[in-house]
Image 1: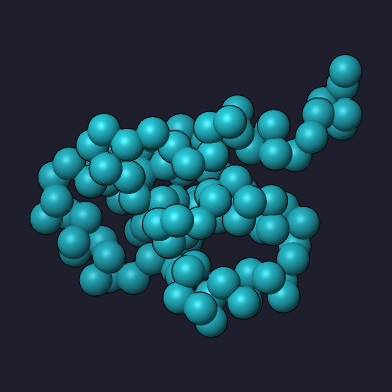
Image 2: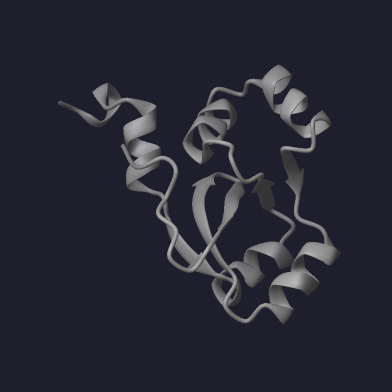
Length: 109
């Protein structure tokens, strides 16, 4: 199987990992961090970005389920020294979802 035959979801899953605020801060400074609300499937949202599904992305945004990270988010993450995230890069964006200390990813099948 070649890279072009590998399903997008499988590629995104392989590129998803845990990241802490110190590592995420540089991406926030570049203005490329997009937050995915708890309960949303991070990989499904990433697939929408890959597929340039503007209608579904806008729908999630209007519902408050997806937003560009703001200063208030960064301030809270800075104060929570243990802030952890699941992250996946869909260039130029870094999609993140906050996780608890012992929580497993919602997309692990």
